Image (cartoon, rainbow, N blue to C red; front, side, top):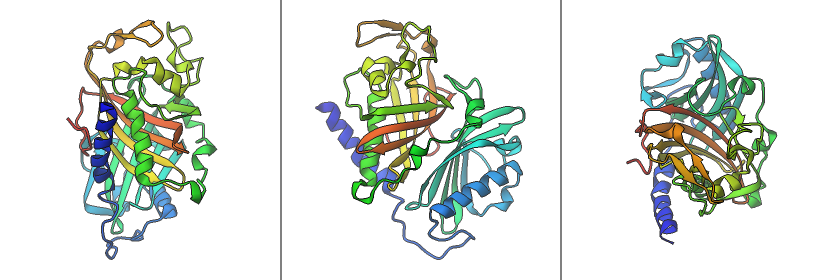
Length: 330
C-alpha cells in the first residue's frame, strides 16, 4: 500500500513535469516550420535533420537561436561531436511523433566510418524552429547484448504503427502511468510488483530481443532472456538495478498508444548475488562496481498493457545527472 501511494504521489508530480509544456500559447511562427507542426511535418523534419547530420551542415536546419543540444546528456554546440563523425544514415529508422507538443523521437541506425551506431534522437519545435535536440548513442561495447548490424538491415514491426480506435484511446497521463509502472517494477525488482505486460509482450534492446529469446545466453545458469516480460519481472532478476532516476516522458502518441521515455539506471555495485523468487541464487559479479545506463525507451501500450518495448541504452559514468532534469532526480 505504501509503495502504491508513493507511486501515485510521484505521478502527480510527473504530470506537471511532462505536460507543463503541452499547452504553451501559440504565436506567429518565426521560422520555416509550420506553427502547428503535425505528424507529417515532424516526420519531414526528422528526415531533414538526418540529412544535415551526414552532410555535417547544421546551418541547413531551422534552429532557434538558443537551441539546446546534447549527446549522451552532455551539452555541446550543434555541429560538434557526432556531427563531425557521422558518415551515413543507416537502414533502420523508427520514429514516434507527438503533434500535441510538437516533438518527434526516432531510433535510427547510423554509420560512423566502418561502424554501425544506434542513435536515439528527439527534436522539439517551437514557433517554427527547433529548440531542443537530444541524442543518445549506442556504440559496440557500450554495455549489454546488442545487434546493431542486424538492426541496420531490418524494419520496425508493423504493430507499432497500428492506430488505436478512437473509442479505446486513453489520456496521455494514463499512458504515462502505465509506462512508469515498468520502471517502478524494474527498480529494486523483487518479483512482487504489479507488472502491466500483455501476454505477447516483447522487448528489443540495442537491436536484439531480450525477451522470448532462448538463443541469447543459452548456457547461462539462469537464462532470463528466454523468458516473457512478465516472467522476467516476477523472477526478481533485475534486483541489480538499484535506482531509476531522472525519469521523463516527453513524447506521447495517443493515436498509436505509444510513450517515449528517458531514464537513468543505476547499479550501485553492492548487489553481487540475487536470490530469485524460485529459490535460485544468481551471481552478478559483472556488476561489482558502481555503474549506470542511460536509457531511451519506447512503449507500445494497448488496453492498459505493454505489448512492445524498444530501447537504446549505453553505459556511462555512475549516477549520471541528466542535463534535461526529470522526476526522481536525486
